Amino acid sequence: MPSLTQRVRRAFQRPGAPVVSYVIIALCVLGYLLQLVVPGFTSLMQFHSAYVGTFFLAGPESGFSGLIPFEPWRAVTYGFVHSTLGVLPLHLLLNMYTLWIFGTILEPMLGRGRFITLYVFGLVGGALGVYLLSPQTAVIGASGALFAMMGALLVMQRRLGGQTTQLLVLLAINFFYGFFAGGVSWQAHLGGLVVGLLSGLILAETRQPKDRTLRIVYFVVLGVVMVVLFAIAPGMLWQR
Image 1: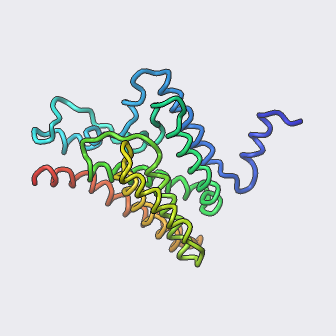
Image 2 (image 1 turned 45 degrees about the horizontal axis):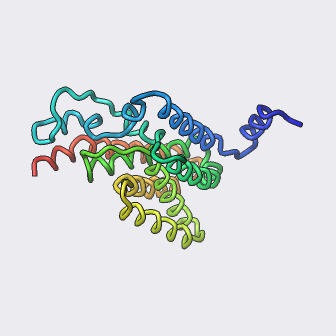
Image 3 (image 1 turned 90 degrees about the vertical axis):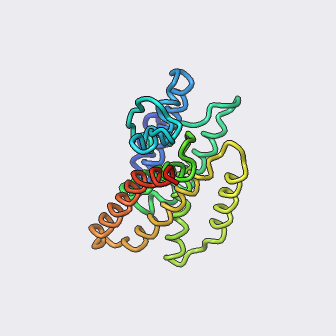
């Protein structure tokens, strides 16, 4: 009988195996364990607009005082920590189950590089949604990236002539649940979904090998737009 190490190695080496999804799940589980044993780990990782938009939110009108460090990586790291409230890690379990479902679909379809791009852009998109719509709140969890995955799959399915009714229903249920449920950041869901839809459009229209350069250009443009929104929108909001 093969050992656990051998079985894990075979799973990772299997053609089309969603290795990136497995790694992200492992990192989220590790992050959760660190939250339990390292005091203050959650607060170091969570997204908070003050740390990403220091130069725009730290003025007298913002309610923030003193010197706030500029930590833009929080727009990604927040997706690797989850709520530790309750006896069971329900927040982590639900998100990882969703990631496993859609990761096993999208990662083999896109390839590992494009899947990583989609996931990271989705995380940043979720953070951007919070930054624009609720700039003084903190958020944790991978939901922004998960909504990006669902949005991207929806666009690609429609472009390729696939069935999208079930996915639309699932998206609607999850989004409106987050909108009305307490303690859930619908802003992160919306930001991730919008970026996922745009990313899905890029991926669907540049799926041929000859389109690689164009795909990179499109994602660079999308990234620049997101950075610009991080830079200017909160300042405009505070001036109103």
